[in-house]
Image (tube, rainbow, N blue to C red; front, top):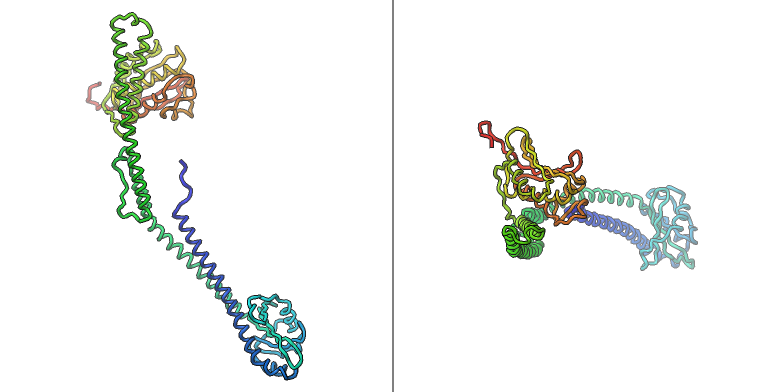
Length: 477
């Protein structure tokens, strides 16, 4: 199964950090909007005070007197004038040292006239406009006034460049502070999530320690579990209860079926052999021979299935005793040669003591029987099958070599899996558990089974055992 390519810890850290950054962005945007609003409010408040101060005396006065009162006003960063028509001033305001001009004043008036209204003061009669000329920022507002019998526009222009620059500096400092805070937050989040997810790590470690053959004993502890993990632990324990009960039912079923099948198989095999020994009329025919052979095959199949069930339950135990390999081969040859139609041959080393390996003698015979029957079944009639042994510094090996089609390289491991048969075996009958049983038994004996493709074709199945090293003073076996 493919391992997951994402981490919950990293996802939580990243999502939390993005949420923090989003909060900082919202904070900066709100701060910027509030700063602009405060600037507009100050400008509007100054303009309203000016209007309340000047306009009451203009209703019965002259335009000259009104202009004179405007000339007496000195406001840092602001200029005020009367406008007779859009974009046309009654008189250009005199120079104000606190209001430096970067462009001619008429250009400022034209720019102010064309600037769009910011549209945030629908409850006032004044319309504030914001614009930028020659690298400087301005606010302008206007209000209709009456001077004598004339209707004019009172206009005010304010240079807010310094305030905008100051706010930009503050924004930059806030961004820098947000960046530093994000780094600190990221570090703290790593610590928080590392500690917060420790219960999950402990739960994972506890689950890894569960053994398949101890499902009836293993349970997760609810002690010191967080509230969020409590339902998961309880659900998993219930699942273990169901698995344990199902496993026990499966084990009882296998044991019962094996017991029930062994009895009729034993009876069939026994009566067939009795009839053959008594010289019954059918003894010389193929019928009794077929009954005996198939009964034996069924008996071995039931035993193999029972062994597989015991292995899954952890109850399959094999011995590890010294075995004379040549003696084991001779015993297998004598048992199987009558079934091989003179196809089985046995080769012994020319010289040297017979090799010894550690294993279970009875189970080793079972492995040899499976390999020989497999070779007889899946190789052409008349081709020889050879039994011989070999040794290395640490291994004692029993060989069952045939001269059939061989095993493709891509299938050399797959054919030892349960209920799997090679591509060259499609036309032959079989259960697909013989080779799997050989590998299982060899592993329980501390050895292994492997297959090689020798020169000249065919397949060389090898039962590899740990070699018994004899001391120089020990007599040969």
